[in-house]
Image (tube, rainbow, N blue to C red; front, top):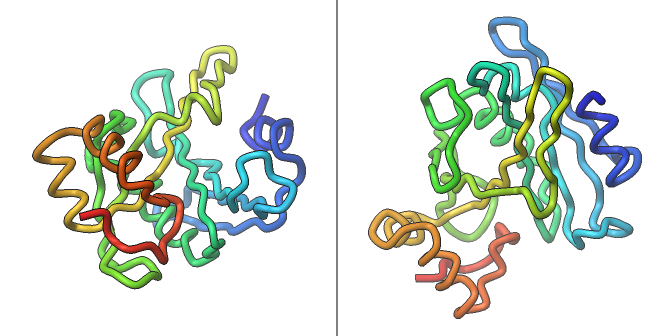
Length: 176
């Protein structure tokens, strides 16, 4: 099953498709599904093609993010993440972070993503001789990144839950 078919089996036809081509000629698509009618309750953006840039052996990685309100400009940041990953050219690990060279739309200075497990929302796809994992991107403010570096990802999630942080919103205030 190809990635687009996998996504469509879960969310239907995408509402919007962005296309990027790397300097090496690799093509990346980012699909968008609006929050209305989406079981996740957020606008969902997901890559198709990142696995050709972020892979180790027969294992590759795609990325997704859920946002409310929707922010279509996120696709540029996602393309940057798909190309750069965590900087190692191997799929990022859960808990890794990446900073992009520009700020995301919102009230603060968000330019970092946390790579988080996406298994609950998008289970791994074993596709014959290729295994694809789906990593959830979580936007972080600098203070949240510092907290995560100091105390770890699990402590960050605990703090988000305790403070009822709407991490899916780029227009939110920092948790700390």
